Length: 325
Length: 284
Image 1: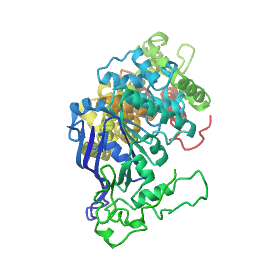
Image 2: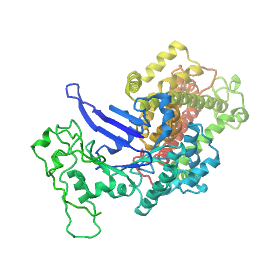
Image 3: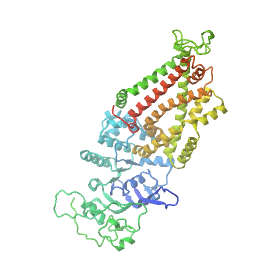
């Protein structure tokens, strides 16, 4: 239902003088993803790897610098004005920060009434009541302001706002990472439940592999703006091919301590995405890096129909490593 | 509702702010009630009673034409305060609109608007005002409009800065994502959240406009006699300053109290509504 073709986003960094070279920050590059109806794609990566930018691109909150976005076969990357506003009801974002994502001057009622009204849907109290009920909020919150709600309630409200317009695709950017662990589980279950009931497709962005593992059918691992590995969730956990994915998995806390675990801590930090050097994006931190990696531009290799990896040495790397999560 | 009551409790704990608010309210009420409470008509001359010191029948004495100073002060207050409000209203309209457009749209819109602001700021305001008044003539309407037209620059910068931060908020993205128009985002989602600093700045603006009008009237370029304004009562009184101190004392004090009241109120509002902006103590 959603297809991304060669999607990319650059930012030009302001120069201090005209004599300095123009700096290009490549936030997202060469993204090719296909998302089936009713399925969930988990987007994983460190801070700054471009996963949120990718989410905003899909929501059309940022203009893509290149590439194409198709929703149900319809190109949405070049829509503008009214036609863009009209198609927006098909895809809705859910944000990370439940404090910043609600207008502090609008009551719950007005927050939910706005999307309904903008898309010419019935917007009476009954409809809003149904929405609140759907996300597990009581109608007593209707007249309240965001500052009178708890973090969990706010996140439910954020979800209700997204669902108000009847979307087919939800793009959730770290929707639980600012919540207490106990509430995280509730909200994740709410997502799962609603996805089933409303037949939603979902892109779930997170830095936490375990959260993604619970929800996602497929997982895409991003590094420095590119997809490093894309595979069904169980495949990622059991048969990761990319050294970066492996390192992420090894960094997960294990339930049984000390039992023959492999652990390769990633050294250093994410390199700057400004004017990226040629060669494999992961080169600077990869323990298997070799000469051939410098000529390799992270083209994707298909391991099988559903498993794609962006590492030129994947077949040489040891394959018998097992991960228990 | 709870937010409002929190605001009031915090405001009530700021003694200076409450004092300022009381001054402002008293001055507004006195001006509004001028026709009812003024003991004489503001332009009623009585040459046999000229330059009388304060007494029971003339609380603030009389001027060189025997007009009652208290009555003239009350009517002059109406003029001064309305100049303050109308001028600030005009500068709010221009400043908020241009600042909002510049901050929200950015790019060349921002460049054009902010460079215009820079140009306007380059011209010394007082001389610009003097020049405009010389061309257009000193009427009450002209004074209001000209003060308004020359005092929006700072406000537009303030509003632009607010819009630059607020447009990054997730709720603005969310509004865009549900298909809200730019107009709706500006007026429903951003502007209401930028009101606190705008309101505070407007409070100071009223004080500034009143002071400016008094200055212009003092120079004879403001509100023209026989219409009373605090500035021109002051001017008329300066010729008699050795014989009739009350002629300058009354308008001088009135201007001082008004400006003090608005500034105290503005300071207090800033502390209560926008803790980011206040330098010193924030506690109630």
